[in-house]
Each structure stands twice: as structure tokens, then as C-alpha cells.
Amino acid sequence: MSAVCAIDFGTSNSAIAIPRDEGVQLVDLEAGQRTMPTAVFYAVEGLAAFEEPHCYYGRAAVAAYVEGHEGRLMRSMKSILGSTLPDQATDVGGGRSVRYLEVVGGYLRHLKAMAEREAGQALRRVVLGRPVFFVDDDPQRDAAAQSALERAAREVGFEEIHFQYEPIAAALDFESRVQREQLVLVADIGGGTSDFSLVRVGPQRRRHIDRRDDILANHGVHTAGTDFDRQIELAAILPTCGYRAIGPRGREVPSKVYFDLATWHLINTVYAPARVLELQQMQAFYPDHHQHARLLALVRQRLGHGLIGLAEAAKIAVAQGGETAIDLALLEPGLQVTLNEEDAIGAVSNDLDRIIAAADATLAQAGVASGRVDALYFTGGSTGLRPLTERIAARFPGAQVARGDRFASVAQGLGLHARRVFA
Image (cartoon, rainbow, N blue to C red; front, side, top):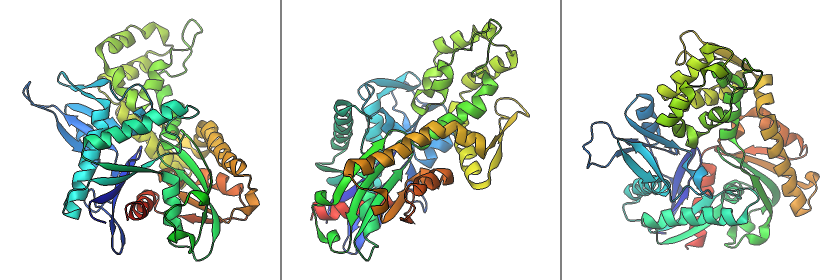
């Protein structure tokens, strides 16, 4: 199994596995951490005109951004796949720009280097995970997304590349622990996508390399954790900056800037001088000038990513405790809002409905009744949201509920698949 690895390139977090004689090893990507935020920070502070930006990855990237270093933070890079962005350039500060696909490639190169250091050799063959759908209801764009990811992988030195659906990889991880044949519905709900697969697993089946006949159905939607964060920010935080406010003329304040501020890969577009100037000239649209002042503070101080971080933290806090106070002192001293579970669920209700419908569609695709499902296997970071998993489990009252490592079970399964496909 030399020169082989498997990469779970996630919207929010990523991991890399190396097949070993005794099984699969997850590589420590940061101190004691087997997963790493899918984030890159291009640092340009103090560089001469001819010097290339220095890149930070994962938690170091987020920390550099939070500490206020000059540069550009890129997160959720996976979300640009399938769009027109991969071959477009984006500004990273100091008059420098990079192609979006170079951002993806640079992150993959970093993962590859970490794995090669662990393996003690160059890695040329890889299994890459992919969602069931990069893009919903558009096969052409979905194929383009996989092609772009494959191109990025080849540019960083991988020569033989295979893809495996992320939920199928999770099923392989679940199968490694079962003692009898079962029909399992894998719910892989991460940062960017919610994928479902209905799979036959069992001790005898795990010996087979080709598992296509065991996959009864798979389906997914491009709705997951980052969408929850976005909706919570729009519902609880951005109204303090004028979102959905009704102006003096009885018209709602223009909303595009708020949607952009709540979308990771669009936030930096709001910081462009032309857009800031446009926002400055919109004071008359606002019924409360404090709201307009907060919005200007938000864009001038580049607080967009920080606010999404507050929304994510509030989502997690509500899931654990039912209510939380969101401290917005970065916008205005003493400013805070309260988020309770009812409001949080109301904010993400449409997204939850869409995810539940995807689970139902998976069974309909297979022609299988819900009562025939033996087990539900939850994986992915967003399965920590209790109301979501409870709503899914309620559709399958007779199924055993099992949980994998929310952040690493897909990488484990991809590593198992790499052992088989490259054996």
C-alpha cells in the first residue's frame, strides 16, 4: 500500500488517511488534531512587491485572520467547485491575486505534504471523497466540479486519482464494526452538503472490492451546516445592522449586502472600495441611523467572517443549552442579542425540511419502506445539531441509531476504500 492516501476534502473540515498493514491511520494535521479547518490565509503584511504571500492553513489561518494580520482568509473553498469561479482570480491583498483553483490546490498540497511527512515517502495515488451532488439538479455543473477537483489534485502531484462518495465511505467505516448483515441509511451532514446513502453492509460483504450492488440509493442536497450559520446570522445578528428594516419611504432596506455578508466566499466582495462607498451613500434608506453605522463598521473593519463565527458558536450553544446570548461588542460596545432554540429552529426550518426530504427521497429511489432500515449512521459535523438528528430518526422509529466520529469517519472509510481500490 505504498504511495497511497485518501483525502476527505470537506467544506468546513478536512482529513487525510494512510492505509497501513494493520488498517487505516489518520494523519495528525495540527497538534493532536486529526482534522483541520478547510481554511487558507494569504498573509501579505510587510512583503515587497515581488514577494509571494505566505500561506497559513487550518486553525493557524483562522488565527491569523482573527489577530488582524493583513491578507485574505479563504474558507469553504469546496463551495466554488461547479461554479464559474475556479479559473477566475481573486484579490488576496497588496495588489496580489490568485486563481480560486490555486487556493484549492494549495490546500491539497499542504495536506499531501503532511501525509508524506508521516508516510516517509512521496504519495502519488489518492482516493478523494466527493458529495453525492456538488451542485443540485445540474449534472453538467456537477461533472465540472469533480473535474476541477481532479485537476487541482493532479497539479499538486497526484498521478492516479479515484473518487468515492463521502456517505459511501462512511458506510464502509460503519461496516467495519457490524457483526451481521444490515441495511443502513448513512446521513452525512457536514458544512456544505447533506448526503444520504442506503447501503447493505455486513461481515461477508466487506470482503468485496466492488460494492456497487450493495448501494441501493444515494441522494443529497447542497444544504448543511454553513447554511444553518447563514440563516442564524440573518435572523439574529444582521437585523442589528439593518437587515429587513423598513425605511422612511416604507421600503425594505436593500438586502443583497446582507446575503453576501452571510456567505463565506462572498464576504470579501463587500469590502471592495466601490461597494463601501455605495453603502456610505445609503444612510437615507435606514429608519435607524445606528443600524447604518453598524453596517459601515462591519465592512470597514472587515468583521464579516467574525460574525459568521459568532453565528456558528450560537448555533452550537443553543443545541447544547437551549438559549444563548450573542455578544456583538465588536460592532458596538454593549450590544448583544439573545437566540433561543425556538428562534434557531425557525431560522433553519426550511433547510431542515429540505434535508429531511432528501432522506425520504433516498428511500423512495430505492423502493424501500422506512421500516426496513436496520440502522441510521450519523456522521459529519452538523449531526451535532440535536433537533436535526431527532427529526431524521423520527422517520425511522425501528432503526438503531449509531454515530461515527463526526469529523473523521468519512476519512476512515475513504482509507478503507483506498486499500481495496489500489490493492
